[in-house]
Image: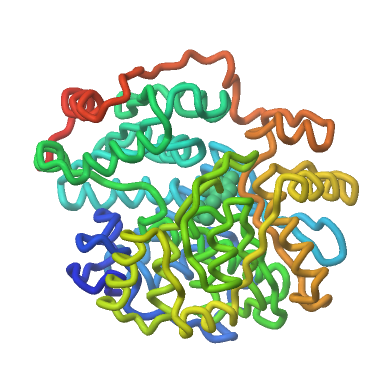
Length: 472
Ligand SMILES: *Cc1c(COP(=O)(O)O)cnc(C)c1O
């Protein structure tokens, strides 16, 4: 399988290449040159299979020659056979006649990001071994990505990770999930500044020759294609349980960077019958506005009880616009440069109409989010996290305004375990969710992190002097 950049001006790479590259060199994002297609019979053949078997079949066409089938199936077996606390990996739970939850939080850090990042860690190790190289991951996190990335690479021989978080601005659970991982290849840095400062330091390091000539830098955010690929699997797995390909289903997806819901689009492109993808946003609603009116314009970020969805712009949206706009890299580059200059752009007719065929944007404010938590609790005794509740609220809205047929099951992606956000959950439903036993004694373990001043140079110098690896 060949991969092309959305901006048309970066080298065409294979799967191994895009996994290690992250962002394309022209500033674009990599996508497969064409979508692999499954027939209804091929989909039907996957019914009743284990998660990891479905994973191998769905990922095989994307991986191409970069892994043998045996290598791919060994990796899937290790990851999905070993690192998740539920035998179904991503089990479905029924809430009422039409609504289901797809629980994606049975991995080590209790958020859906584990499903893909556990896989990415193994892919890194396999490809780096083959090239006899090392990789230094530098990332910034406001919560979930950092802990899931650290758990994915802790203990790997050829990967080292430096994770920056804004001091005092992530929850205790989230911080402890990062800082209690004791492994020599993990470096946690608390910077005296905001998440945006941390993010900007990371971007500067990628562009700083004093860093990238010494270290082979890698990325773990959802610009990395391999993450999206691994997320396509659970759309297939869930739809199969609900009768695919002989019955259509709809999904409601709590959305931030548009990674998770883009994976649903990929599943639809591959032939999975999906009736509708509900793009659920909180009050940071750039995507809801773009899908409803065609106006994609950034505004300031408002802090909410769903911090993982508090975004100003959604990097993966570019992948959708490129695919819907006829895959014209030069036009996409021009559109995105215009957006960089003005923080605003209008979708073309092709982009808008194409998006309307499958997507609908729905926004939930704080009250609606709390109400969805209450409804889930009352109707089925389920305690759900606030991100999941944004998705469920959007699912209810789409059903109520007849955007989804009453006979179509609606599956809301449950993106985090409620115990990650105990305060917001307790306020809404009056119950404080307990951490599952498998995360162990999170509050009894010793934390290890380094606190640094907020300027760029201090962070850069820390990374350079503490990195055990050098580019080889
Ligand atoms: C990251 C995250 C999201 C948003 O996912 P995207 O792929 O960025 O759209 C939603 N909910 C939770 C709990 C998350 O951690």
